[in-house]
Length: 391
Ligand code: ATP
Ligand code: MG
Image 1: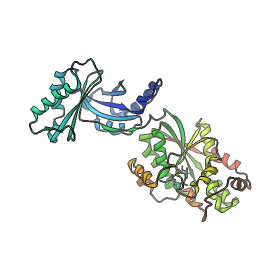
Image 2: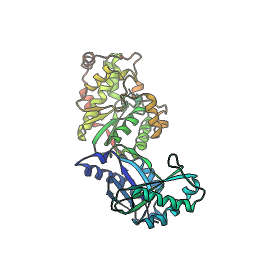
Image 3: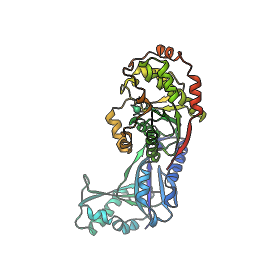
Image 4: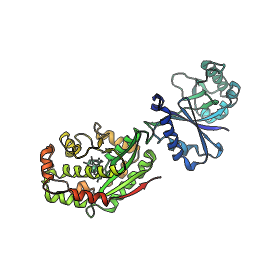
């Protein structure tokens, strides 16, 4: 039996001249994610990638489909049987291939797509003949064109005729790294992992940067963030993870700055360190998990102060989202349970009792001038520890 997977892409199909470049990235990502599942060939035509295992009988289709549903740039996936491009071949195989589904259904319909216009029969004729063959094999079945239990698909394409029982949705978006690379400021919280997922969906490969403040923060708090990155990797691809020692900067803020500005100054220091680490990696964009009005440091005035600490593009994909929407995605990508583990974060350790919700940039800058942070920032950059988190 000659089975394969039809991978259809969405947004890439709309690209003009550089469509090929996007396809190349997608194919590379697919090869990498499925590399240990055995040999397979990828062919492309008509906004579809044909994934053809060298040994279909031995190929783990379920695992392959599970991995493929996490690869951005894919609109839908179908596990299909390929047969010779003739009506006889379709009729000979259709019942045998879909036997289990046909037995389980009470109603069905056949949908035909005929992208090879040279095929002698038109789509309605193909559907009618296939439907007739199915009805004569399975007397219990009835045709229901509006709300069938099972849709039997016949696709007449470039390389053959394909039979399948429908498609599953892909992850959508653009292939990771087709939009370049950004650096996510990742905490152990709920928001930043979701922000990472959302920017990967728009085609960004990611570095991650995390600030730790030992002894105020523990190893297991750091471990938690690494676990979150591991959970993101199936979607984002490998993540270069930078761990920044942040204790001295935080202690200096505590000692030299007014308490109600701790949070905003800390956020600015994070951005400054992140910018320096990013520049070394030739990265021009930072990503944060901030959402407007969620907490005191995420008012418009606070975000203005934060933005002013860096020249890089700051992407905030959650800016207009409610917590409930964010939590829904966290469940979907399986980061929720890890994110809610109650380990201390460097932000929580130095939380002021009454943070200024509307900090003014002028006063924030003035407060920072009471101490020379530059050497500490440089030291933090130098002492940043880096590793790759991969599958
Ligand atoms: P999250 O759920 O992502 O922690 P939050 O709503 O708790 O976000 P804050 O704690 O104010 O908000 O942090 C805002 C953003 O700052 C985070 O989304 C993240 O991008 C970044 N950030 C916070 N703490 C750290 C940290 N320790 N290391 C790296 N980035 C951090
Ligand atoms: Mg947080």
